[in-house]
Image 1 (cartoon, rainbow, N blue to C red):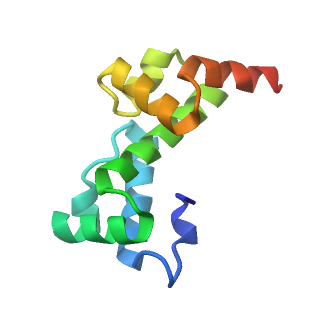
Image 2 (image 1 turned 60 degrees about the horizontal axis):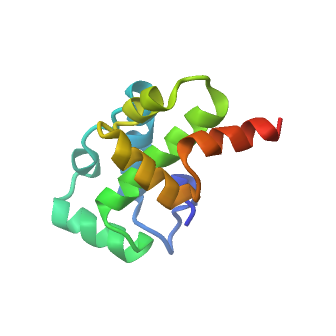
Length: 121
């Protein structure tokens, strides 16, 4: 799945959804907290969940977690922040949950992911 909202076209989620994703990403990059996605969307939680499930095949929570994990991957690859700081900077308060979800999404632990990036440089 391409998580880039620029790829959400007429056959994808509605424009309001793409705009909400863009606002969430900007807030996530700015302060590590994506803010209130439902407020950005300007729709009810139920409606946002239906749209997310229909077009992305996952719940809104799963999608937002995916965006946070993508940010974590970039921080691990391109900064020297320790894993605990990266997790916190991406809104993960529980380190074991962060590790579990990161490995689920990327197939390796956050530390291994970083090491693989260093091996490629």
